[in-house]
Image (cartoon, rainbow, N blue to C red; front, side):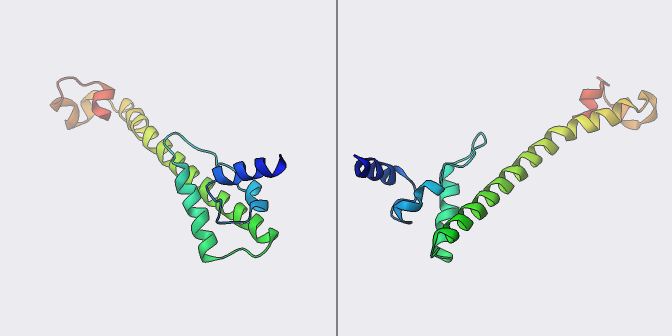
Length: 120
C-alpha cells in the first residue's frame, strides 16, 4: 500500500520524473495570489533544475529555498505595484483637496469642480 501511495503522489506532482521521488515532498504548491498561475512557479523550479542539477538532499533543499524566495519576491513586487497604483489617485485627491478652488486655472475650466473629478 505504501508503494501505491508513493506512485499516486509522484504522478500528480508537477516535478515527477524531474527529481527523485524521495525529494518530491520538499516541493509543495507555492502561495498564490489571485490570478497567479502555479505552472509559472513549477517552470521556474524546473529551469533551475536544468541549469544547476542538484546532486544531494542539501542541493534540493537549497533549490526549494531559492525558488520559494524568488516566487515570494515576485509576489511582493506585484503586491507593492498594486498598492502604489491604488494609492496614487488617493494621494492626488488629498493634494487637490488642499488647493483652494480659485487658486488654479484648472478649477475655472472644469464645470464640476469636485476633488474626485480633478483627481481623475
